[in-house]
Image 1 (tube, rainbow, N blue to C red):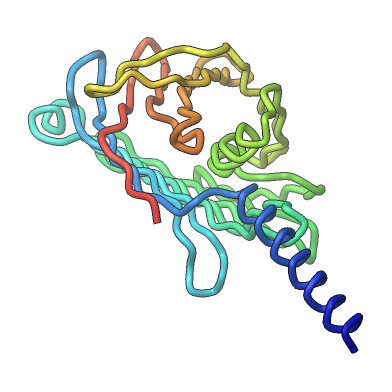
Image 2 (cartoon, rainbow, N blue to C red; image 1 turned 120 degrees about the vertical axis):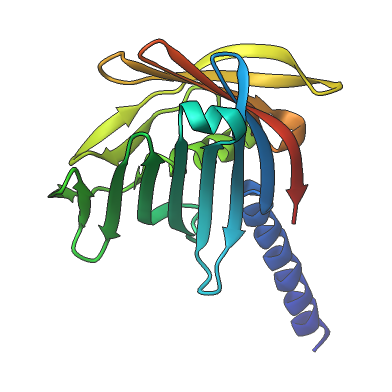
Length: 238
């Protein structure tokens, strides 16, 4: 009888350890507020949030919009959402991706993942494309969540298979090393990454802070000579 109770207690403790490992490998839920700069001038605001939905899935959402005088010159509102599952084996499986840009320029894109049929339905520019899926394919927003998770695990050189614009692309965020960045009144240690598009026309640079679960405290997007920068103002963890 005592041996049986001991086995149950040991098994329960192992379950707790396993559950803790799985939880620690992911991220706490959060909402982060950013200030948007365009060509070095304050132009608007942005948010990034990771939430858990009622059905048990997760949503990672980013929003950037111009405000005030900048909105009169360059009206822009961009929203991206990735809805995904975090499986027990640690795998991240995307389910839906949405992109919407309104204002001076308007465009949208959707990506629906059907893992049962092994295809993703991608709609953009009024056209629909079917993308054959393979294991570990993600969407182009979810990779930023995985980047945070894998940095927590100590990984620095990372590669992703991303479904985008009717095909599977390879994203390789280039590790640029450690950089100390002043954010508000604080000087933060950050891990710096840069990703360049396959045609070389777009660059995205992320400065991720280890003390903030590798949350990007600054994001810079460079396209056609224009530089847009998001700088962290506050973050709330749940």
